[in-house]
Image (cartoon, rainbow, N blue to C red; front, side, top):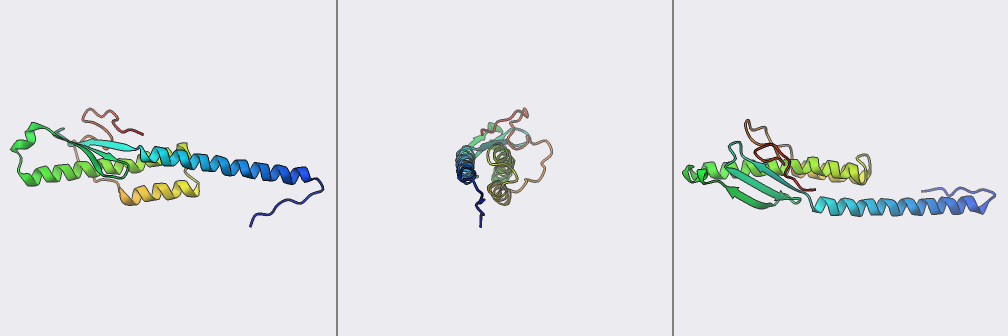
Length: 148
């Protein structure tokens, strides 16, 4: 329970209430900004040879899939495996983006910030390294493709 300072002057109590209300408003605005920015996150990853490129939304759902003509010569199981591996790498980048967004809005050490980052890390764990693959959130040239 919060203790209201009691003193001889009513002004100190009024100032404390005003400061507390301003603090609550600032935290609410930061939380709204966090929610808006997290909702807008997306990530792109490409397979090592660039034949598969996947875009995912902040939910982790695939929103884009580009397949190079080279996949026409691949067996179906290889195509499926490349798509899933590339999608998981794109998803794993969302946790890093969420952590950056938390730091810019509510702060990494806030209860809200820790909860958001933990949720993304739990849903989208770091993808295993794939030698020669463009990293999560990166295109085949290594330049950043993620929005946020």
